[in-house]
Length: 158
Image (tube, rainbow, N blue to C red):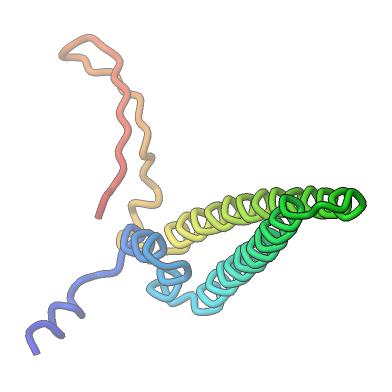
């Protein structure tokens, strides 16, 4: 009962939404009561994961074909079949490189989507203090005691 009461007393924050979305896409949006956005980010990452898996599967198939054609190429004695296996081996190797490049590109896009999800979670996260919205995080002030201009940047971490 005490923990439930403490959980109710703890207020939700933008940083809490950010941290949850960094752990799992869409979780910060659910934390911020933005359910549709949460499902959207989960779906986006699922699509990216599917594309990465598809390219991985294509890579594995091309790799298996390459190994088979290369083994046949090395063991063959007929010149016509040697030329055919060599061409097939080269085609499979090109397919492997293409699938590997596509897999890397999809992984990069998935990472960018994950970061965008975290930034979005922070932006739509619950605002704990409405006056904080009007405060500037960057300030340029003159300190008359030191006779200097000072620059300050504040980022709340709560």
